[in-house]
Every structure is written in structure tokens, then in C-alpha cells.
Image 1: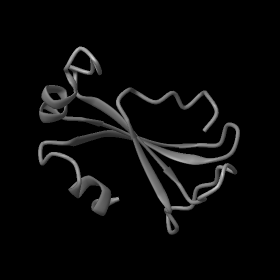
Image 2 (image 1 turned 90 degrees about the horizontal axis):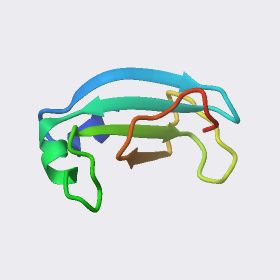
Image 3 (image 1 turned 90 degrees about the vertical axis):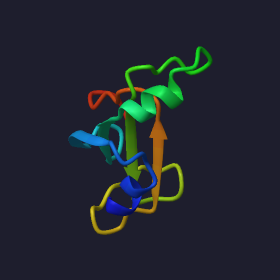
Image 4 (image 1 turned 120 degrees about the vertical axis):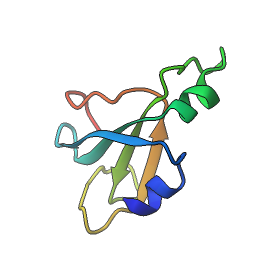
Length: 87
């Protein structure tokens, strides 16, 4: 996780972490950053609050799975994740 956070602006704050088991399993990390808000606040993106969701997965195919000791992919999504929906 530290490696992933190093790629984001230095003012990133982790708001919460959820392990989602709906439709597979994945880790969801909600972050906030003023710098992200400035970068993503353009009308084409529209994320001026600077909220992003990082989806962590241990699989590299379409079958979602999550293991904290085997993260293979991390997707940054410019919106808050919904842990009640499928990974």
C-alpha cells in the first residue's frame, strides 16, 4: 500500500479501507487530497473535492480476488467507491 500511496500527491489522506466480498473480493481504499482536487477538478473530470478510490486486487484476470499479501493490480478511480456493489 505504501508503494501505491507514494505515487499520489504528498497531501493524500486515507479516509477508510474496506475489504469488499460482493461479487468476488477486493480492497477499496478511499483517499482525499487537495492536490488531487486541483488536478481532477477540470470540467471533463469534475472531481474538485479530490476524492479518489483505489481498488486493490490480487488477480490479473476478470475473477476478482483480494489478498493483502498478494496485490497484483491497483486502479485509481476518481469517485468514492461503493462497498455494497460488486467488485
